[in-house]
Length: 122
Image 1: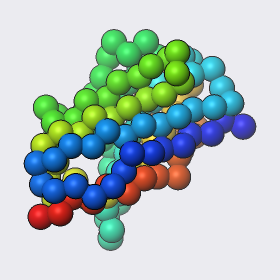
Image 2: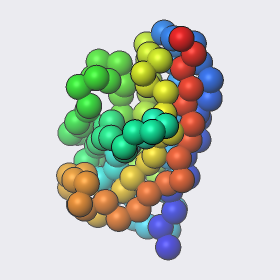
Image 3: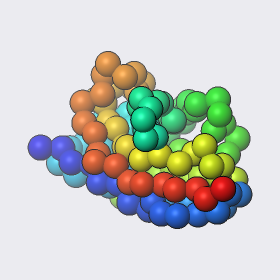
Image 4: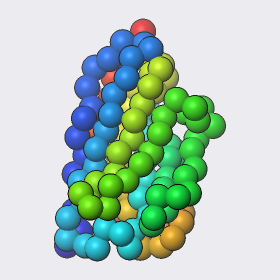
């Protein structure tokens, strides 16, 4: 019933920037904590960033902290991931996730997007 659709991935050089978007439909967006995960070829899925209901609390993977910024626009039912100073190690498929909780814990995730590819050329 709830659908998450990512967009904004692509190919960028080391040091470049991309902004990912996740559009949410079929639910009350402001009731959901939102987050981003990523998975590189041959590796497991890892947490990247999360944001609470109102957008006043965020968490980040240490490797991306200071380079990535998660935000949400509840009027547009959309969550964003601004990625600056991209590194080759950031290459992965990025997935949007939602949970009807204040904090986005992995066990509470109810819905996943199908992913968008980010490739950073060395």
